[in-house]
Length: 254
Ligand code: ADP
Image 1 (cartoon, rainbow, N blue to C red):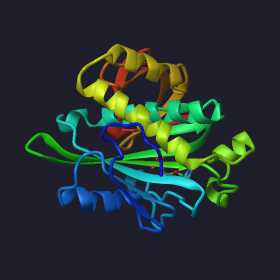
Image 2: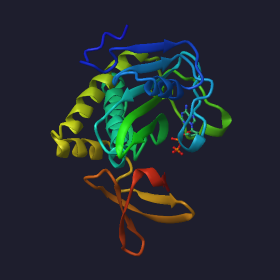
Image 3: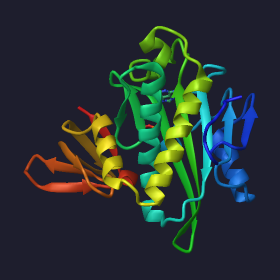
Image 4: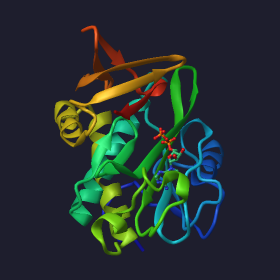
């Protein structure tokens, strides 16, 4: 169906017409021992999820709603890097197929002209300081014509931006090809500088004023760099430089 040229990623794909959440289904499969590389895709999600229990709008036949099961031999502290790798793979995949100037909003969104076209939701299960599995959820607005009132100013689709329909299968294929390549490079510690460079090149957040919200604290600063660990380096207004770990903040462009 997808004519994939990957070695192991997506060799097994569960297709659903309708499902509550692909992440939830993938989690169930992973907990039951499903192998790394297996993917759950649904034409529609009835209860698609974002971070912190937020809703992800997932109408039928117009998006890519998929979750990948990964079992990287890494510690839980490194799991957020998988989100960054996925962001890079998705961003470049979308660019390659559509020619549209997709960018990464650190850490987990892909945007076009500052509006969200894709959200990435990674969920992890770990035991004894080792990752057992990671569910990598990727939601992409492909041929969606319009959005609900509450997100219509912040969300967009490839169709709205490119003014045409796109082949969802082609986009899935491009993303999985990239994802397998970058994931393997990361695990083999190959070309890590190159990966970071690529991420930075696509990252919209760098050089921008950002508002960091962490627990009940909030501060404004300038995102000046991305550390080797994938943290955002922020220069506060008083000149103090802090690194922000992806798991603990919300970043808003001002
Ligand atoms: P945040 O970007 O605030 O971290 P999440 O990544 O958790 O948010 O994504 C959930 C949020 O994204 C929702 O609260 C909603 O505002 C927005 N949203 C929901 N569905 C979509 C969609 N299909 N496209 C773009 N944005 C969406």
